[in-house]
Image 1: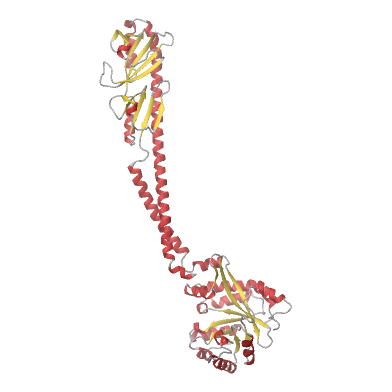
Image 2: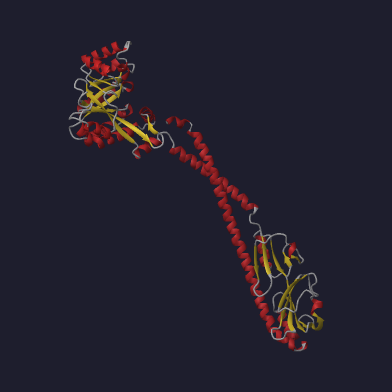
Amino acid sequence: MFTRYFSVGRKIVFSSLLLGLIGALLAGSLQLMIFHHKRAEQYDAVINDLQAYLNSYFAELLTTIDKLQPLSLSPCASVAADLTSRAAFSLNVRAFLLVENGNATCSSATGEMNVPIKQLVPQVDISKKLDIEILPGTPMMPQKPAFALWVRSPLLENRGVFTSINASLMPWLLYSSRQNQFSGIALATNGTAISTFSSHPQPTSMLKRTPIRSATVHGVPLSIYLYGDEWTVESIQFSLLMGAVCGLLTGLLCYYVLSVRLRPGKEITSAIKRNQFYVVYQPVVDAESMQIRGVEVLMRWKHPTAGEIPPDAFINFAEAQQLIVPLTRHLFQLIAHDAPVLKKLLPPGAKLGINIAPAHLLAESFQQDLKDLSHMLPANYFQLVLEITERDMLSQHHAVKLFEWLHHEGYEIAIDDFGTGHSALIYLERYAFDYLKIDRGFINAIGTETVTSPVLDAVLTLARKMSLVTVAEGVETQEQANWLRDHGVNFMQGYWISRPLTLEKLLEAHQKPENYFTTR
């Protein structure tokens, strides 16, 4: 499982790049949406302002025209001054003309006249109640486009008022549109339009672009078209820059988070918090009576995705990542949790064999951790046996003092996997051990034609001379058990006796009428 940490960097980089790309796309898209929304609000504001202005302007103009309608009943000489005054005080109005029977009879600009209105403005249909046209110019201002507005008298069908109006009604809004990067504005009626794209009126069909907003003027057949771009070069460039920055930050953050989350040792810490570790107990029996005298406590890890993790893998890894102390403390807590049930299954004075790593032995908290475990266990019931592998033996000075303290506190010490190191005999001479656990490699050689059995004979002889209690590990056959019993081994454990069992399985085995705990 842990070998994946050597290649996980590639996965982290790939994931970071992928999430960075997603972050860039999301940030860039969001920024474009914000720009689009802001431009849409600007477009709406301009078209609404323009519509409101023209609504107000033409409403006021139509009111003025309504007041001028009765003047068509009087001679021009008597109303010319009033007509001229009205034109002077009406914004953008070039002239008011009074029309009777299709002829313009009086003008605010020239006074009395008698010219057919069709001759002056052939585009205007005076048969309508209201008509408006766009003219390229008027007689007084031939180069300046104008609106021609006809309003028939509501009382007399053969009379009405004709008005010419400057086409440039809103210079401040046209200027504002350019400042906001709008393409332009057009005012259109009856197939003709005047716009910011041309200085002369042109057919609406020549307005090739589709307006981004449109509106109509209340009371007048006049349409307003607003032109602009959905996206600007600046907004796209800024969105790309924003996406690149956010993508980079997202990728770096992802790399940091994944590196922290998947850093070596993180899963062990997480597994402790999530209670993925559990304990199994391998019975240790008296070689003569075959009755259980204790258990070796072993930790297991069931990973939610990787399944069962080999103990050698996660223990060695925990030692390398300096997590063996919290892992062993967690083991102590699991043992304390099971202790009330173990008390019912094991006899008084039963041995609880616990493997202790050298890093924990050297830790300042080791003595207090042991005291805490003792306080959590039933008082004066279990005998704790600390199993220390000879390959990981401490320095002589530190070990002697520590062993003295352990014996003083009532703990027992076993040298585990004896014979697998390089200085086994020296350790037996230097340190005060209580138990000698014989490595399974010696046990497997029993009954074969190897030199191991004579060596095992020598080890057992040495143990008897040094008054060490012997425990044979890895007993798997009847032949091995008989040989060990005949040669004076005190205790045995192995698959022939029992595999390591969970607390539930241990309880089931205890409840059987005949089992390997009591007889064989």
